[in-house]
Amino acid sequence: MKISNDENFQKEAPELKDVQIIRADLILGLLRMDTVERISYILNEIRPESQTTIVNIFRILTRMARHSLSTALKIVQSKPLMDCIFASFLPLTSALSALVKKLYGTPVHNALKLVRVLMSWSKSLTIELLTKYEVGHRILCYMSTEPR
Amino acid sequence: MFLLRIGLDDNTSVSILDSVTLCLAELIDNEIEEVALDSQFFASVSNGFLQPSLQVSIQILFSIHL
Image 1 (spheres, chains in turn brown, red):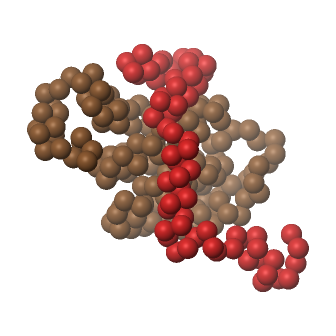
Image 2: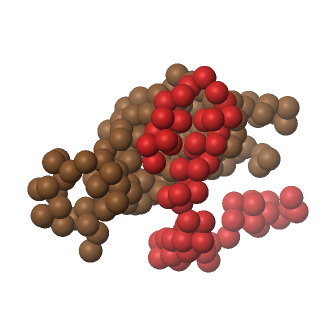
């Protein structure tokens, strides 16, 4: 059983220090440090041009999404983050060119994987994402692009 | 971990942001485990691994070789 599901731990968690949380559960520690909000800020405001940075951000988010339903909900409920992910990395239209090196505005498979992991948690989460962000249409756009 | 948080907050340097995200990803992400989890998912959902790819479907549908 994960320590995050332990009742005693849940009661004590608000009083624990960040270091203690990180030692007990790394993902909970990252949540405590507002990593989701920080990542959201980076993607929305900094808009990194480096492909490596963006891919690694998706690796982090996917791993966090796998942790638990509550973590997945925390990610989905971060509206600026989800809006940015869908608008920038799973767009409804895309004009791909071999010369374009920026990932913003082009479908990114790591983003689709994150959405898949989030959706696999519950039916309600899936319905929410499907209706709110037109995931079906975005997948069609993703499938119609030439792989690079 | 706290150094990484400071790194995430340093929005002025591309290389720091690059390194911090890589470091954090390497810390929490395990590629082998990810591949295993993905395989498990695709094997358990609708026999996904048995389904032909879109390219094969189009080839069959239009009898063409892409």
